Image (cartoon, rainbow, N blue to C red):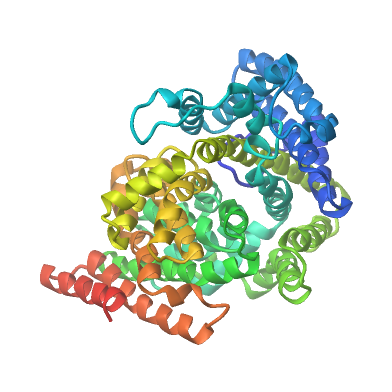
Length: 599
């Protein structure tokens, strides 16, 4: 049986899913993307179309649910590989056309590639993102008929299609470049770690650190999900993987089922804001802001820690209401087991960070070195016993997982790139920016709230990274024009693009957790919103206390401001959840808000 999920993350693959053909294709994808790091400079119109060609079999055939889908998937894959091959083989000639199509063949290939990108995204993640892209394309084609400020002068079809498909814009733009050269490498990194014993190492470390504490099972979920999320970057995958262990543990200790599901959903949602991966958002942010990756990691670190601290305080508050017990000593891992299993993630992580911060290498090159270390660790099982058959099995699982996850993220980014391309061609982003400024009366805080609302609505149906890209393309300039630093504006939008993971009516992490725990999703969602209140407040706190993201440049100021915000968040979280008189809770919330936004 094949394990398939639409979440763009690295999850284990069942042994019987590792058919030789898919294993070989996964290996080709891994070798191709790793090879780009060491080959040297490869033209964008070669590497990016080949990236798309490699993802097509996964999203069109591997993820097919019916024989009809599988047959149509093979047909589209063959045609798609031929179309991508045409772009790659004719790279030099197409570069001289400057995005203008001059033959019927090129027009046919261009239109087909656009349709194929929409269909690949639809099969990977469903209709919402392709519909957004389709609306953008229709606006580009017919927007000249819209009266008023939101119309545009018109785009010749050969120019529009050409810019999106035969030039370094649209499908082959900078976002796709990030997917090819950076995101794919870190997906491989996560797949290799998850194929080995790193996941067990995360769980053991979390159990050793937090298992003996009050509410220990919930705190184990928080720590393990933070660690696992640092390599997976997906709320849904975190819930499915760590939740399979932590949720039954909480239920055995007689946690309310709604609380058990909420703890896992909230803790798992933090994976997308936790460096180094941040659900691929960190690397897209590098491209969009021009900020070095190390600075983005530094800027994102304290807000992520504040988020998990707020969840921790909320668990303590629930502990006072439900008498949450520690994990039994017999269920906590022994020190030797913790030490051994921690090596499986510690060695690659330390190597990754050392090569970035001390060696001065790019993140993708450092991750490549860490991948080779992770592959070497696949020779060993959890008892450090060398096993060649085990290595082969684990490496095959890593190849299949990496190939599929690269494909899903690639399909999302290709589709989002169409939206960004149309925004650039038509100037619609500038018009929406002007609209935000007008509605907010050129005031920052109303503009922030409008942006947050847009992020929440778009994020309900579109994956976080894609929602972030689209929202920041239209709202980012408005926020920066009102005085917000570009990186702060991007972090603000990225955080709020994540709201829908725990916020009704569409809250993917909550749905999965509720199904696993057997409880009403609404009950889980309400507790998740209370536990995850930091997700709603911290982006605004970053704006009110911008020193928080200056850890790299002003460590003392960043830490002092983070401490102040931590105290405020703790008061708010405890006030929202603790079993106290209403006036005591209101006073705690008010004091916390004053501490964060006024003091």
